[in-house]
Image 1 (spheres, rainbow, N blue to C red):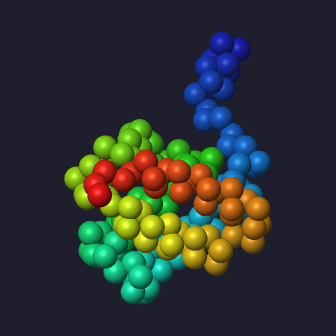
Image 2: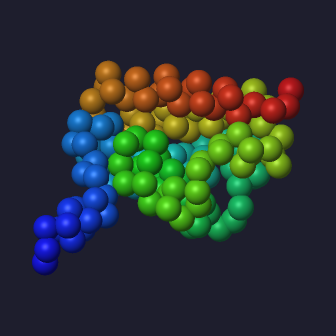
Length: 143
C-alpha cells in the first residue's frame, strides 16, 4: 500500500471513543443497556409512572433498543444512534406527544431509580441526573 493510501485509510477509521466519558465510567455497553432496560422496567412496574408508560408504543422492545442507542450516544459512547436515526432532535421527536410537567416528573422518577440501581459512582450519577433533568425540562410542550 502506498503512503497516500495508508493515510486515506487512517482518515476513514472512526476516532476512538474516550474512555473518560460517562459511557465508560459507568461500565460501557452492558451497564448502559442495563440502565436503559431498568428505566423501562421501572416505568412498566411502578404505578407512579403508569401515565407515562401508557403513551409508549407496545411492546417496548424496539423503544428500549432505541433508548439504549440514544443513551450510549448521549453518554459519550458509540454513535450508532446517529448513524441509524440521524441527529436526535429530541424536542421535535417528542412534539407528537403532550409532554406535561407531570410526565416529565414521572420520567425523571423512573430515571432516578434506574440510575441509582445501576450506577455505582454516585457523584457521576447525580451529574447525569442533573443534565437529564434539564433535558427532560426542555421536552415539556404542554401544561
